[in-house]
Image 1 (cartoon, rainbow, N blue to C red):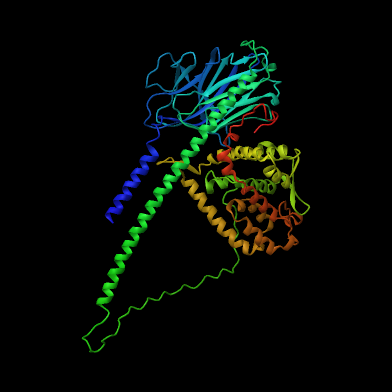
Image 2 (image 1 turned 135 degrees about the vertical axis):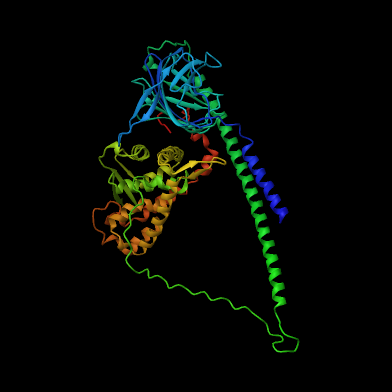
Length: 599
């Protein structure tokens, strides 16, 4: 047994070394969230406004440094640095801006000041050295500046090069989000965005003509290079004029960079698979060792029990009274507790929390493993909240119609879902569930559907992170539930059990409550059980009454279609598709593709 334990200890040490030795030493501070708003001016310059949330440990000493790429601009000017201080006003999302003071010389004891100096390559990088308040923790810093002559004007196009995250400075970044507004009059159809250097980066042209660039994680060895190719009509006042054609060469360069990134992503996937296989092998060996140890312990106990039984099997002298009688131990009787009568009236229940959506509930329950079926749960929730009207069509599917409402009443992922399904798949006001399935499985268009789903999933995760359901801990930087997340998780588990019991007698709850609960039941994985109970209590929905959207009589007759829609979306092989077609995440607008579409 000692040898087995010694071998297990060696395996555990080997596993720890395997998972940690390959990584370089991380920087002393990291970026938790980074938002950039940039505006390209008609003269080819760009005004930039950044908000960077640094995560600084208490052990960190000294400033933080923002390395600004100036390689493709003639100069940087109008630099301002300030901190964001949350207001104490209840219900206000605005933050106060406190400017930092510029100093020529700094020392380690300073606070809320900044200075500048040229980088290692003075013609390419400008360093902004920022002294945060002492004590560590999260600090949000804002920067404003202008980069002059950033846009190059060829004879056939305008080109924009900029590196928001400069290569070679070893900074871990999470939740990178950048919005670039092009000059007024630039047609979105002619804009081609590219992103390079970020394994999990993506770019798209939004409906208002702005360019969105996102990355949920940037490692210390990664960087981000953004290239925009667009018509030069909006930058007619630009001064960086190049008297030749550049469109063909630039597109070819971006194609080669895309192939390079694809190779890197495949290597990354293979590395993850190797680590997962190694972890599985180690876990299997450890499990076998534990089983062997348990088996050996039971064998010893069995041998000891047999020996004791043999010693006490007979008593008295041979041939005397009691000779040959076996002494057996009678089993102790276990008195069963009387069963509780569960036929009484079920207590009234309500949602543990209605301020986050069913999709956000999926993040609480399963982490970032959001399923396409959560799209269906979100549609049901929007209909129950009267943002959508639902009509049964032909007894086989539903037609969803948009109602009039204020956009600011929706969360980002809800607004994106409506624009995606109603504008890209429907006619702007209506969309059928049959058309959604056709978009998901139709020839060639399922790639577009997957890209849209990936963006929607990122928005859901980003919204869920604000609730603080989980946080990244050590070792291996695994996400674990916070006390807040554990409390809500237990409440939802109790709610799920109660909903299961109530579904046996569905008429014990008003239909309006079932309609509110239905979307969350799908995310909890008991949607089919709820529908089965409702069908039993309300055959064909004839006795349903009240102001109902999902469970009205006509809609209730085809209620199983919601479950079928979620099931068919979940059956799509998104994981396999992601493994072999990963470039869909970093969407390139090549010449051979339809230039009028975005991911």
